[in-house]
Image 1 (tube, rainbow, N blue to C red):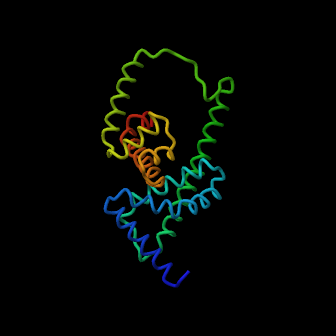
Image 2: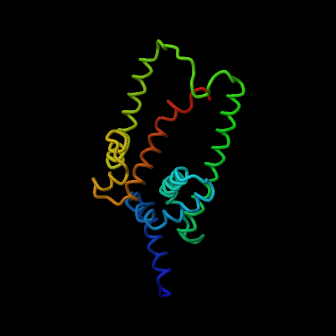
Image 3: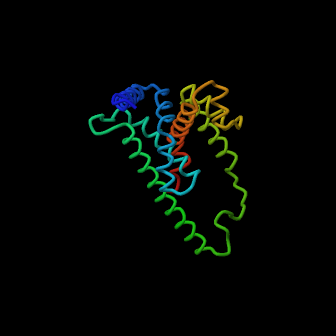
Length: 201
């Protein structure tokens, strides 16, 4: 490799981050293709499970997309920045897993005669109304997505296509599709958080 090659890679990386900062969704795809395997290795060493490592990588690139406008080239390389994000997300996941396991163990200890995953079924008179309200909230959240994000999510969750199959159908890089699905799902979660995730807190 020539002396100029690392500089060329760095310049190309900086250009991709600048494009992402300007709102170009396609810019994250090439970064994923270039560094996805490296970030997966970092995540796997921390979380120890393939599915969790894949989730960490997807989350890391979603965060990179969000944080691109704040990236400072003077503080280091894009590769180092992405690795730091992935490491942080992996540690967050491990901490969350520990908390979840502790809560599950506590629930099982409090009610040993019941499985924590199964409750006694009781008909809910308000269930139909709540279900209709949830459907309305989900439709509104889907409508808030960009057309490419909505299309990728509909193909994944309504048609059951894998991300590789979506990439093939849309003739898009796999990294672009993965980023699009992750960003869309994150936006859905943010839109639906008050409805689904904050009750009872």
